[in-house]
Length: 79
Image 1 (cartoon, rainbow, N blue to C red):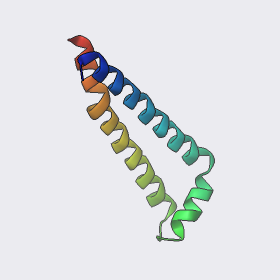
Image 2: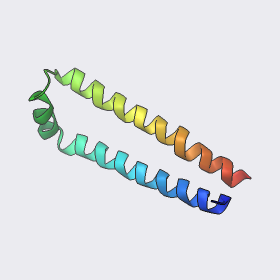
Image 3: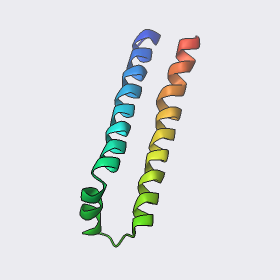
Image 4: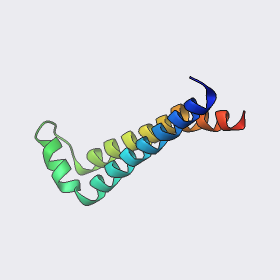
């Protein structure tokens, strides 16, 4: 795999992961009650805990995208 292929691969990974993050965010915004209802069938969660868990998980996912996809992509572009 050469640098051009690896750069394209990381670009597509970054785009796909950001689309997943946006879908998750919009589902959380527009279908929060349905998601909460599903999760409270399995776990006892207050509204505050539910929000904190999802926002924290979204933040960790975003940091993972930045560190594992975007930073290597930028480094390869600078080569």
